[in-house]
Each structure stands twice: as C-alpha cells, then as structure tokens.
Amino acid sequence: MFGFLKREPQPASPVEREHNVAGRTLPLKIVQNERARRLTLRIDAGGRGLRITVPPGIPDKEVERFLFRHQGWLEQRLAKVPDRPQVRPGIKIPLRGVAHLIVHEAGTRGTVHVSQDERGPLLIVHGDRRYLARRVADFLKREAKHEIEALVARHTATLGKRAKSIRFKDTSSRWGSCSSEGNLSFSWRIMMAPPAVINYLVAHEVAHLKEMNHAPRFWKLCRELCPDTDRCKDWLKRNGSALQSIAFD
Image (tube, rainbow, N blue to C red; front, side, top):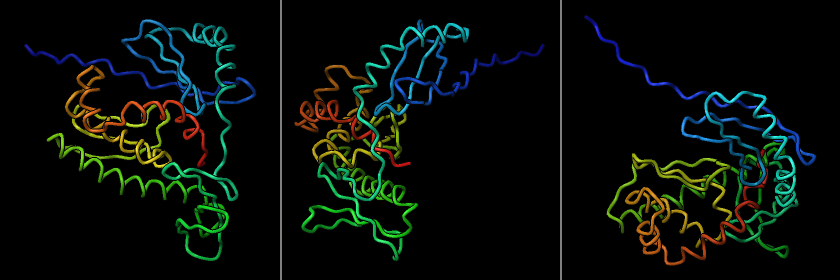
C-alpha cells in the first residue's frame, strides 16, 4: 500500500491593482494570510502604496466595503505624507544627513561624485539626463554596500555572530530585516540618514542574529551595540517617511 505525502497549502499570490484616494492613484496589494483574523489596511512608507491583509476566503465585495469604510482615514493619513519629490537637477537630497544639491553635467561618462562650491554640498551626476535618477540611486547603493558591510563586520565581531549574507533593496515597508537563517537586508535609502542612524539600523539588525524578537533582551543588546539607539530610533520614526517619499523612478 502506498502512502502519499500531504502537500502543504501554498499561500495565494498577492492581488495587485490600483486605488484612487485623495487625488492620487496608488498601487494596492491585497495579501491573503492564513493567520489573519480580520482585514487590516496599511499605507506603505512615503505613501508609495497601500496594502490590505485579508483572512482566507474573504470575498471581493467585502474588501471593497472595507476600503469604502476607511476612505476617510486614508485621506487624512495621506494628507500628512510629504509629496514625492522626483530626483532631478536643482533639487536637494540628503546624503548621510546633509542636503546635497543635484547638478547634472552632460558630455562625460555616467558617473556620480560629491563636490562643494559656493552653493554648498553638491552631488554631480554625469552622462545622459534621462538616467540621472537611476544613477543617483545606484550611487546610494554603492555607498550603502561599502559602509554597511563594514558596520556589519564590526557589530558581528562584537556580538560573536556571523551574518550569512547582506542584501540591499528598496523596501517600502521596513528599513532592514534579519531572517532566521542569518540573512541581513537593508534599504539603501538609509544612506540619506545621518551616520548615527545608519549605525543604529545595522546594530538593530545584527542584534536580531542573537535575539529574533523585540523583547527587552533584544533592546538591551541593541543599546549595547549602539548607545544612541533610542535617539536614532526616534529620528527614523519622525523622518523615515520623508526619505521613503523621494522618487527615484
């Protein structure tokens, strides 16, 4: 007699659509979660999108009614989200907490470098104007890789733990993460924050290599790695949405 392995149910793929609210058309992701007991609605950092988590089997009409009931709440919250400034010549974006004016210089290879003149700190972007925003994003990714990998090495040495991998993403829901396998992920946008905040974020995720929770022991360990934890955590809470709102697309 043959036995068959019972196949675990696979999570349903997120449903992606758009939703109009407060004069904006935002991407909306509807995610089914077997652990969910009710519908929950979240605005992504920087107001870049919406996410609804639903229990299995919820009909589409119920999701629509849920959205309708929360339309006023969405409008109030989105009104407080800063506009999404598009990365382009003439605007300023922070680099390690210091505002830099973006200056485009055509006619040379597509490189980015930091400079300064009577206008103050500059971010000089060379090459085709069409690719300026992408080149600034790539510059921030390189800076993140260089600085964060060094900070991870320092904090893991202090902790006596090892990170399996370090990855860089443009996440809208969180600044960093640590998997149970020891994989660390960071948003490269953190390079726009002050150095102390960058250090805090790395210390936070490295601390998860030992404490996979946010219990008191975790925060004690986090403060041992980064004495500025409370101040930097508060800074990121107050200013994180503004950094997430900057459009590099």
